[in-house]
Image (cartoon, rainbow, N blue to C red; front, side, top):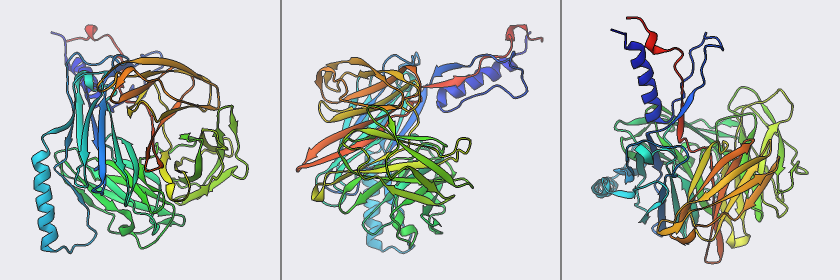
Length: 517
């Protein structure tokens, strides 16, 4: 009888990779190149997404859209399911141990109400290729916890879009719901008096998570004990007002969220007295060269914020990738970022009426210091200003998707920072009906192509946009969504990294059929 131990080991590794969607298994060290075999990419069979609580305003209206692309990465043979459910709780984490009985009773009452709704899906996706939608309103709307399995898992994405017409935090707030993780960087936050920035933490698991929040300003770490050991209960969300974590007011702050135990979804809701509010999502992992795509042509203010998490300072060259090529913006050629200190730079007039993307590169070749970065972008003037945030993002890769596009008001930015590239953009069927449409775009090297994306024929409802790399170098993408409310062009920008629809699984290094007993 042949041994099955090696066979079981390989099968277990494949199952782990296919289920989690996050594992990348490599050949053991020490093997020769001749022995190595090409890895295979398989579609994931289970994935999770977390949507933060929409906001603090009673005037808010929130739309949710979930979508899984059809075809492309294949998918499991099983039908599967994809649902976004309300978390049982979403409370503000207190930095003060004192609370009166009335506050406690109010929280208990709200908690009981949310528990009653927790098992009812806000959005339930039935099939790939057609978006599913849901709605919520008011300040009590909780965070959502979602899971997709089977053929609905590969490339599953969800968009949360909130409209607040007036009052505190007005604006169009958009966020692509995030994957749970243990480490997040948020440049472009603030503890200034004009700002009210909250870190939202959501725990998808059955056991409590413990998180730490570190703040870094222009002079380094903003010391605080109250940002340590924040408990996020199982299946719940908490929000933390970052200005309560320090007595230091700083215009530019980098927020670092890590977990001691468990994992969370993390996002920052940034609100300003004059420019309204939007979500700031995490920057891509620290890297020597970073790309921030999708600066609108009519931006009236652009502020770059960067942070170097390592022990070395970073000297960065700035390049604006526009319609015709890459240029170094006059007066904004370089940015020096000291180790563990947040650096900011105003880039007024950088677009010169042309949509573009910003790329940060090492000033000296061979001296690439990893950084994280984000842009604070403002459109409009006076009392009609509106803000959005663009974090550094990873390339589209094989495929990336963004949901909740409308018949009007969407702009797609495609950037090829290196070699020229070709991508296929597919507009899905609408949530209420319509026929998918695809279009191919060629992006010249070192340029940004900003287009009005294709719209499904006979569109009813909202639709999703999927970008697939066909050939050439890496492409970075972002979608801008605009909605005019009370004469204000409210907008939000969502970057489009790879959708994690497949996972790399190693090939067997030997023929298992010849194993001895």
